[in-house]
Image (cartoon, rainbow, N blue to C red; front, side):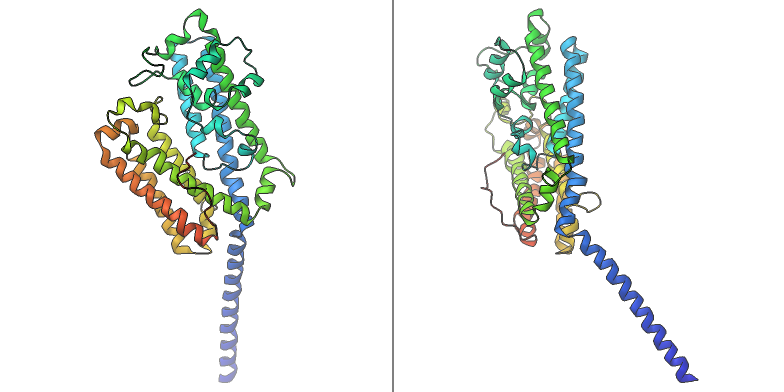
Length: 372
């Protein structure tokens, strides 16, 4: 009788062990499937790229409406609404700026959303031209006279000294739109905003299209090649945040008032907000939705590194948020807080270029220091 009871206990114990092993194996199987390259790339499209472009499209559409309202009735109130819409669109663009591959590159749209080196003389020349402001003419203008940064130049008041046009100071923005002869300037603002609206909407359509030749399908099918390009984009992006945004202002010669034209988004007063948005976009790529981004894949390869990466992203975002005001102001009043942001951003950059790339089997191929 005792042998029978003992036998039954052993059988029951083995069954419990087998059930545990089965459940554990099932959960491991699910985890392994969750972190395959294919699942990772699908998650990045679904949770990061598509929502990023949808947000950009919505903000650009709102900017187009605000620009049109301002063009019809250029008042201080309508100008402020257009400026707010521009800031929203600009920050949305920054949050997806890490992505420099796919349709935005294929369609040559990168400059419209990212290129900061607009030329006032080219913009004013287009405004004074007799050419019809149609799509063909906008394409001819090139990156220095259109896009988000051209709109920043047109909508915001000039800052600093010397004036952008030499010895002659430019008037406040509203004064340039108010006279009856300023209709061409108003039309130009509306045309540029509508151009951004159309391009952002096209990018959404590209990434949500179905079929084997659609952007999402090709990206997922790319496997390791897509992962390589993704991590290279991320590594270059973190370098850009450090060198072109944070460290750049620390190295500018005094007085800063003479260097404002070299600081991106100083005209709109959003240089620090822009740096935060750039970091948050990179963080979104890493985290996805509840670790569905690179983090979820990395956990299956190197869980401690995945946690280090998450912590470094959080520290970098918090440090740059702590700057708390436009970079061109804080660099005069509180340089150490920018230096702290640089330190955290540099640690993040190094992790992306070394440990993360190594763990994911990626070779960093871009030329360091190239910028955007």
